[in-house]
Length: 279
Ligand SMILES: C[S@@+](CC[C@H](N)C(=O)[O-])C[C@H]1O[C@@H](n2cnc3c(N)ncnc32)[C@H](O)[C@@H]1O
Image (cartoon, rainbow, N blue to C red; front, side, top):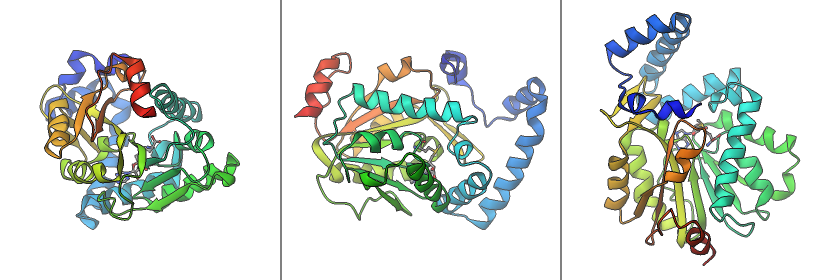
């Protein structure tokens, strides 16, 4: 993914329109057949699973069967490693410490998670996901990396109410490439409840596919939101919320928002962030 993914032209693009689809097909003829196969499969899965979580769980089952690393969005192992490293480096730069307790929402097959598990003190990583298939792949990653002694929690979930988790518990909550696959009501469910499980100074970072044009979705797999929509939703639920400009410098197609129960310091004051999370 290049910086070009966030060019003003691409940020205004509406991928759900017929004009876009025809234009894309003409410029990428080899991608037409795979797109049509995916669209047919997704139509069938949506018919079988009318609720979004059931539908997306079925998408993940189908994708994970073929290749768990591709199922979380990495077409090559090198890219899977690089994407995990990018998540990890960002968290470390923003003050993640071994003693912190972290909740990774939509942890997938631990692309970023295995590095975080390795870094945190035993028992401090909690990964949740809607897909049993990807959690089985996550356990495989754990074994391959020899991280059994770190005793991470890996748990299936059917919603984002986080009701089975304790109050004031997590210093860091994280959701990478999860809201890019979520309708707004699921994002709101998460934002309505995440404040309860965060510590007072804790923060929740999530990525999203940003549009500066019309909000839209493709195949109910990929959702594009305006920054103001998500900032507004977080604030509606009493959270402080900020667009993370420094994430925009990374070679990643999505953008990032941070929310917290406490007022967030100016992201330009990098040292202030480090102080903030240490408190
Ligand atoms: C693109 S993958 C990213 C996985 C991981 N965060 C990473 O960066 O490697 C998205 C993951 O989110 C999970 N997911 C999607 N919707 C979810 C939801 N509403 N609650 C929890 N997990 C969800 C999927 O099953 C999948 O494992």
